[in-house]
Structures are given as structure tokens and as C-alpha cells.
Length: 205
Image (cartoon, rainbow, N blue to C red):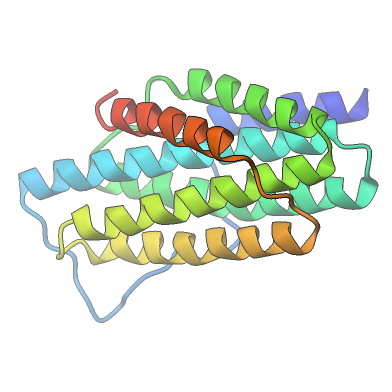
């Protein structure tokens, strides 16, 4: 019962509370961000997509922690979710600074990601960890693309994305070290398709 209550608490905090980071937001103090209206809108849209990714990360790790019977692995997932909560706070704050808004569909994204994480967890710990590895690899690639799309003058957003990319890569390495199993190609392709739908929709809604 306690893990289920914890999962419900995590969902409520992710979707309805103001996120707070444990680490300071990455900045480039020597660079001042100056954006025109069009650049500001584009940056806000891209950071909204990144925020959705972090909402999904909270759902995935919470579900996987709930699904595993391995106490050590449960702590691993919970620690990863805690670190990802920094990303959630950084992106939410940056969106507000840009005058934008988070996705109206965040509850839908959370529910879908939670279902995927629970399904992966039910397939066994190695598969669940392999799901983390592939997810983080795809997120890392996605963040790389955002570094090419964000306005060059948006130093604040770019600093956040760079740090997020480093953290995601570290999570993939940790999942491999913990015994993550490589997923089959069809599963990877399905994950890419789902991610494409999510990121395209979240850019606008």
C-alpha cells in the first residue's frame, strides 16, 4: 500500500504543485539573453516540449519503482526521479520567464508514460532497465536537436538543455551498469513514434 500511496503522491506533485529543484539552475553568467518576440515564442515552445519530457520521466520512474520487487532497484529509480525533478523545475521556470505555458495535456502525457513504465516493469527488471537506456538515448538525441533549434541568443535555455543532456546520458550509463537489456528494434521504433507524436503535439498544445 505504501508504494501505491507514494506513486499517487508523486503524480499529484508532478502535475499540480510548483516544482522545486535541489540543484541550482544552470546559467552562463557572462552571457545575457536578448530575444525578440518570435524567438521568445519558439524558445517557450521548445522548453514546453522539454517540460513534457520531464513530466513523462517522473511517470516512468515512479511506475518502474512501483513495479519492481528489488528494493535496491526501487531506490535506483527513485533517485533518478529525484534528479529528473530538477529538470522539471528548471524547464517550468524557464517557460514562465519566457512568458509561455506548460502543456495543457500534461495529465494525459503522465498517464501514458506511467502505463508504459508499469508495463516495462512487469516484463522484468532487465527489460525495465533496458527501457530506461533506450528512453534516455532518445531523449539525449532529442535534446541535441533542440540545441540546433533554440535561438543562438537564448543562452539561458541552452544552458539548461546542455545540463539535462549530460544527466540523461548518465542515467543511461547507470541503467546499463545495473543490468539493462537491449530492447528489440521494433520496440525502439515504437518508442520513437510515440515520442514524435508527443513532441509534435506538445510544441503547440
